[in-house]
Amino acid sequence: MMTRRDFLARLLTLAAWGMLGPAAFYAPPSEAKGKLGSKPFSKAWLIGEAKRLSQKAFNPPKQKLPGWINDLDWDEYQSIRFKTKRSLWKKQDLPFQARFFHLGLFFRHPVQIHEVIHGVAEPIEYSPRLFQFGSTLKVPQKSRDIGFAGFRVHAEPDFERDMFAFLGASYFRAVGATKQYGLSARGLAIDTGLPRPEEFPEFRGFWLERPSPKAEFVTIHALLDSPSICGAYTFEVNPGDTTVMDIEAHLFPRKAIERIGVAPLTSMYQHGENDRRVSDDFRPEIHDSDGLAIWTGPGEWIWRPLVNSPVVRVNSFLDDNPRGFGLLQRDRNFDHYLDDGANYHLRPSAWVEPGDGWGRGAVQLVEIPTQDETFDNIVVFWSPEQPFLPGQERIFKYRLHWGEPPVGSSAARVISTRIGAGGIPGQKNRIPSRKFVIDFQGGRLNDLLETTAVEPVIEASRGEIKAWAARPLLGTRAWRCNFDLISEGSEPIDLRCYLHDKLGALTETWLYQWTPPA
Image (cartoon, rainbow, N blue to C red; front, side, top):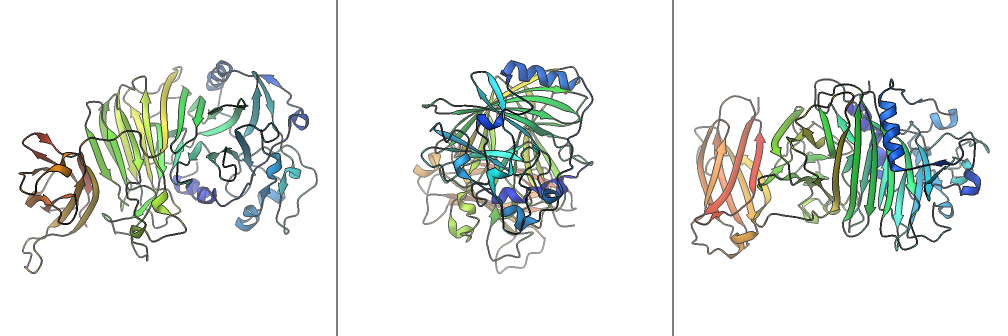
């Protein structure tokens, strides 16, 4: 079975989605009536189909491609361009256009794509005539219907840049106001972070509903399949400064699953202000997301800065009916990245808003070591307490926001986390320690006088907290908390901190897991 690193290596092209140009295609209905023909379609049928397939043995997708596609290198694949005049829904002058990705390079499993009009699904067939190819490629004039790698959707008034895309396994992603891609989402995660190869479910087919001339959203249906589970998905996507996806998933396990990840998000964190373990680069920070935010069922707001861990580690945040969680890019200061190519300061955040009550479980964060910014090494998802067993139907509804989160704490939030040698500068540190410096801003902190009695609440799973303090940060509206941690051994230490005054909590809760050097 493919390892996580092997699979994510295939996703290098995800970083180039915004640079591929219009690498997509569409065969008009008159050309699409091939051997498959038109068939009735409904969401109920798709759910039934997923249930039916779950009761049969898994049939893996075929990987054999025609020789000229099978051997494409990076430059040859990048040279493939779609003829934009063939975009789906372009001739109808509709508010959305769909364009499709070519098979090849890392994307070797074809998906079937259909257009749905008034409850009838019509297959869209592949043809080389729909593409422009690089001059070095020897492309046959005719080809069998090999299928597609995925698709992307553009929305008016900007049909030049895409709004969201599905490409590779069950991966998809979207943009917000900055029109900049960043982190990705997945349909489902299975056995992520366990000491064995991860299973990657794949979207095997898509059904794109033709929107009306005045439509404000577009509806996509997808069939998910893997050795362990089948699923029927519906995505209702509404573009804007924040792109909003309403997602409904009907899941049918083939077998018992040890760790299931609902609404998974995948991102990259190489180094930043709090973690410079891998930082031999002229850029001060390199990451698509800098922290995990959680709004718990009881109403607590949590901020957990991300880390490029030296080992694979999994942290579970137990909860009951969570109100939301997401991977955020809070730091929007260009000077903190100094990269006008990757534009990390413009990367969108993604926020999961559960629907219909998800019950008991845990938000799980998986952090994987990486030396390379093209490798997505951060995964977060909801892991239900109730196990997934064969013969069940599990339904999950949620809303996924791409851009700025729609909600936030009324308390002050963490704006930076920094870590360094403990002790007092200029004085010999007799006992080795580590200093943690956390800056908070917002909420009632903005209106406090410098003389207000503000105290930190600090907890550590082991070790001793020394030299703690909380004070206004001179020249800013922020407040700073700092403390030293004295510990022995190399086992991870869980830290927790927030500020309060006589009226109660002033800030969200900062959580961190620090691993002392061996």
